[in-house]
Image (cartoon, rainbow, N blue to C red; front, side, top):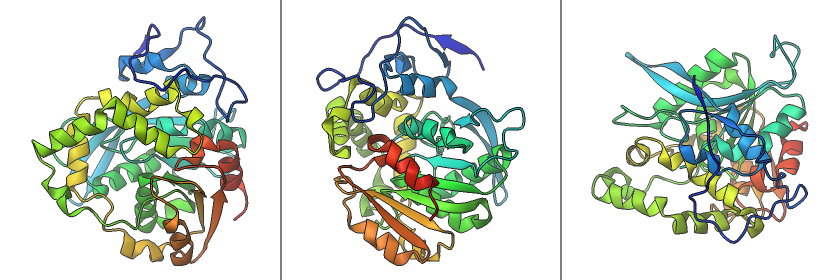
Length: 342
């Protein structure tokens, strides 16, 4: 994999000036511009817009590798983007380590949303992996006429087999929580504990989803790609608006520049997504932690208690003064919950 070193510019719409401080609401220190970062060449050039140390460091670690996927008689390969961090456990990184952790991101997002959480999990002694789901993030989605939860699950299982191969603490955020539930129900042997961060799962698929074809799909993805729209979503996702910095806007929008972003998003939406899952949530058998921002304005808070009621071996943890993304807004507290005994 070749690497590129890029000049630092920013083409994303932002709210005010970024508030950089090592102690400001959990944000990292500003990036030192005298040290030129080297990014993988498959990332969009606007990766150079990143300005916070955690974001730059995370982006530099992103890799891609082909994952062999089999569904019935169908076999294909997904060039999958991921970050793997073993800490200082080398050359045999998995030997004598704590339980590895695997992270699934949310809808129309990427693993960059774990840029603050992942280093803290590694510092706690857990080999940690973040992966971009098929159709999302920086995983190559070219050549796929359809993208379904079944295909995503097969991709994730192939990655687990090839890269980890032992039971994990599986963490899913928002739609990634639904993907984690689906994965756990099919492969319980691969999951020692399930962690749901403000998770989707109970909502049914919109009736009109299957009709998301051009020109309707083009209109929908153009709407979602609007900087003003994404800015408003970001403001709604956080309890503390100071998190909506230039760097946060770059992280949230960078994957939109990947080839066939809009086609893949429409294809996944037409599949119905995880609308089938609600009737199966009660089948979860592994220990489950439900972590929920008290001020979630994206999914609301009703489903938090519903998950705890429906999942037999579960516990609900409220995160105060926090919106939809506790892994970004309250990463230290979220790590403490994930790594504690259930």
